[in-house]
Image 1 (cartoon, rainbow over the protein chains, first blue to last red):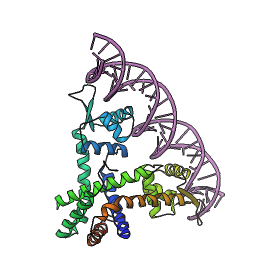
Image 2 (image 1 turned 45 degrees about the horizontal axis):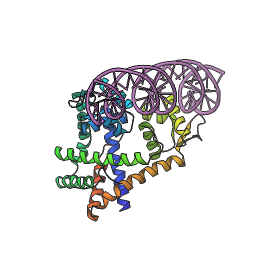
Image 3 (image 1 turned 90 degrees about the vertical axis):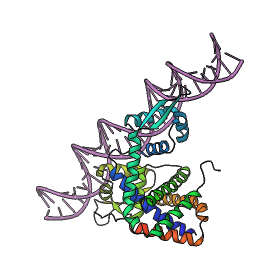
Image 4 (image 1 turned 180 degrees about the vertical axis):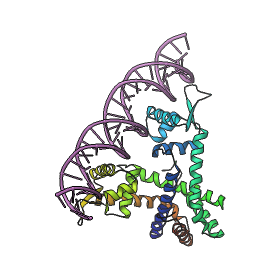
Length: 144
Length: 144
DNA sequence: TATATTGTATAGCTAACCTAAATAAAATGG
DNA sequence: CCATTTTATTTAGGTTAGCTATACAATATA
């Protein structure tokens, strides 16, 4: 099983490298690793507060405020005052921000489309099934 | 097929996130995205010159020289004068550098070991076979 | 020997990221 | 209502990576 995992990871890396390279070529305005992390987080779960985001990335609120300044200036995120608590600001991706992520995902799809086409119908089906099974068994974030 | 690819990418991302998170927790001395790129490149193909590396990352030689200064200071790479041409310096990972990459790969394996164990023997075999088939059909770097 | 190549040192710039401390504004608990 | 706490921001200040151009030294090549 160890040998299989080793091979699996090697192929995984190759695919990953290919995806990153494609995304890199497409991105006119590159963002940093942390900024990408932040945007993905907001994509998965919008409406988080500054404090929550700061805790999530393990930085001080003042740091997070400035990170959001930069992303806001780039037009990717927006602050919105919270309805319940006027001290709190709620962060969401803007249309531009969502579009950026969506575009990257499209680029990824295009980058894999041709290679994926070399698989047969039932191979593709099986492949997705196995990926799902592996994903489903990843430990959840609230783990030990 | 588009729907399958979409699902595939979603699962791929989930696994990727998991791997990165595990590696992040393990890494005491985090390096930047570009530094990681450089080290992976040297891992795949050691003995490149400064000029080659500069061209590979699309930066000026003076920039590359400084990037290598930093990695050298961290103990990850070493410059070695070329035997044929005394102007040229050849770059390789040090033992520490290789060890760092190896450790990360071990961390990845550990992070997937449990989830991978939920697959049956023939599922794993099939999975690796499909990953290989997909990888093999990725366009090579000298493509259109 | 004149010219080209390879890498480096230097000076100087931008940008991201990070913190602590002071502040403003709003909520909350007596 | 008032004291305290909470939330986010501003400010001042520091570190680091990454990038360039220019000048230079060492070496190779024609």
